[in-house]
Length: 211
Image 1 (cartoon, rainbow, N blue to C red):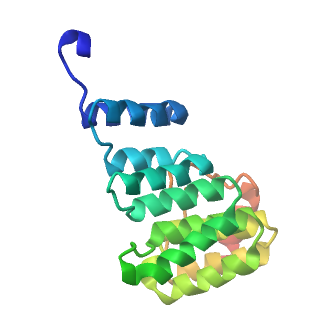
Image 2 (cartoon, rainbow, N blue to C red):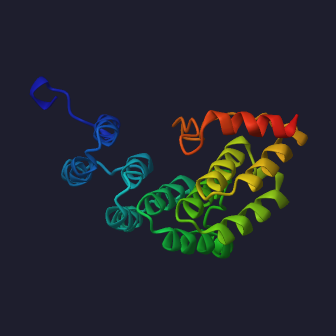
Image 3 (cartoon, rainbow, N blue to C red):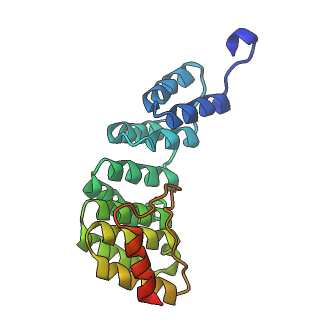
């Protein structure tokens, strides 16, 4: 770009960062932060959130600190990205700590957890076999209808099935139908679960159970 007389700006750097992220080259994206500062361009929140979402937990915590140094206050996307990265790395207890902190510190201006935050934590608990924590979280989500969507039910169902709780999954599926929520087999992130941990014959059994 410079050779052609086009100087990069925050948008062109942002495109590069997102490209590196998509090709799992987050380290290259982090290196761009220094290049941006050398070019007297401050990274924006979107750039930071993209890099924090990379799944590398150590980098994520360092990036949050760099955000603050640049005068950018983490938003709900930032916290969700941190929680997602920690859950992907199996560090669900640390993710749970952050989840609690942002609820406690609402008075100081931290963003309140949204349905995405709850879904991330729910999936993280189930993947680690933390059934009691998952159950408690579901109960708190059910008390607030805004925190329970189709993806929440999908995660709940698949979490139970992955942990061998077929009867409980049958009851959840029946509850979904009774509440007018039509089951499907897709996750919130667009990854297709296709219920690989259980056969379609079992899915048909569940459908038979509720009809």
